[in-house]
Image (cartoon, rainbow over all chains, first blue to last red; front, side, top):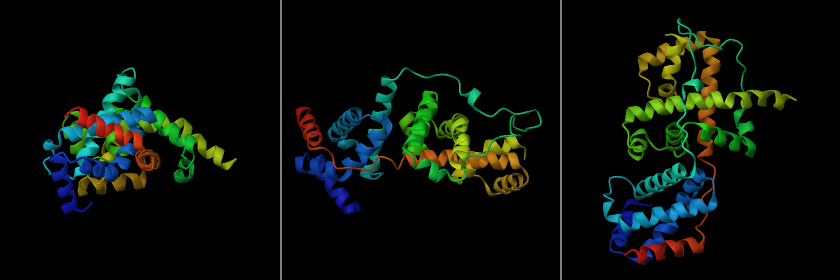
Length: 203
Length: 78
């Protein structure tokens, strides 16, 4: 949406115009519902998340200062609402991530590096299968909560480091550290499945 | 640069935030270390698969009942 149109829409929303509310939902609702679906993976929950987030946004539209796009602001509220619901719906996973990270010998070589299996030649081909997408998501859900949340924000929703830090209430450095650990741990969790994909694709 | 140092730099390398000098050392190590080459490739594939999850769920128009419910909830709370 062009900036001028966005500014006008924001102004109309701030003045409480129901038609402006509808325009906003028509313009941004589909993308925001897709975000809620990706995080919650449940249609009813996704719709509840969107409803809660939109009501919050429309009632507090005065908080929108225009220093980001309107969509960025709405997206951030939807993501925050969805993560809060995700945390409530599942038993907290606060297990240590260290067992999923690489271990090293004193000389800096990685333990188990020799004899490691290669992954599938074409990850794109492998990824097209729905079961693989489900597998990747299931592995993300196995990560301790703080790592799962950061990978959802940075690598699924593609928020920048500072925005993700704002949602999580931590500093940029913590986001970077957690993301790096989350990615390594996810590689470890995926390895048994993806390495065997190669054998399967060749059979 | 050791294998351990290289892996510590991986996210910065992938995200394009690794300083040029470190990037050169990184490339040099990867060029001569089969194990790290394999690890780097697997790391990239992991992140790529997660990125692709972000492209799942095509946006679709909101169901009418949801729009109505949102508008009603906003009105009710005014």
